[in-house]
View 1 (cartoon, rainbow, N blue to C red):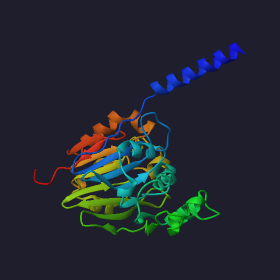
View 2: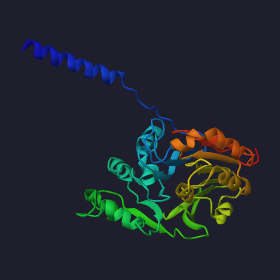
View 3: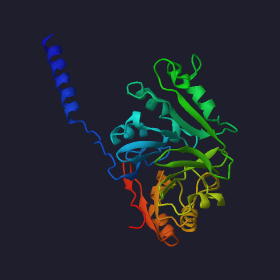
View 4: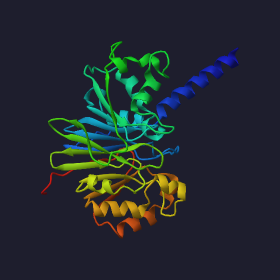
Length: 314
């Protein structure tokens, strides 16, 4: 009996010690008046330092727009200091898990917020194995049949939950689609090619400042260059090396294609994100290829990085 009690006491002390020694991610709120924060800089693989895709637009200390929320990025959202009550739009580029799977976690957290107004959410039309945005949300939240049917109030505003204002955007559109306009900024989207996956890119114009999120694309869309033209910040997904196989290249832009897009669009600052092990292994080669073509500012994203935008003319 004494041995058992001693073992229990020792075990408890070890648990307490473990709790005390545990590491935590410090909050990292962006302080620039206009900034983009990278929540997740990785792709679909489990990586120690990179969670899946997610980005926040910060304006005057508030997180206003969330672009994608892939696996693990909800934890980074918490570390960022963002508040659910401040969000004015959730914009999903496409419905792969590494871009959308943490949405239920975010909405569950919203139950504990003070938000009272509806929350706009945008996403692509469907095709093949992929539902459209509405079908995706119904599959998650429909009463009785959804995976998280107890959160069905997000579909109709019942049970004390705020209603999601759904906006399904044509993934085949080659012209910009207006998504949201406020007194401070405008959001638009355009269809991009990601193999068989219906996908969108997003642009946010804050006054004269322009931010573009490519999402996953394969570089075959000349209209994307016009969409990204004169961007102060272009976040491009760098998921494959130059020597990628045919299947991967059908889904993702090669480094040389990323460089040509950034150059042709006259982008001021190119940020590479959505890195995978295969693209990280060849990162030096990719950077050299991009640098040989594109002469603007170039960065490689890490989780929780903040990119502040300077007013034009400085």
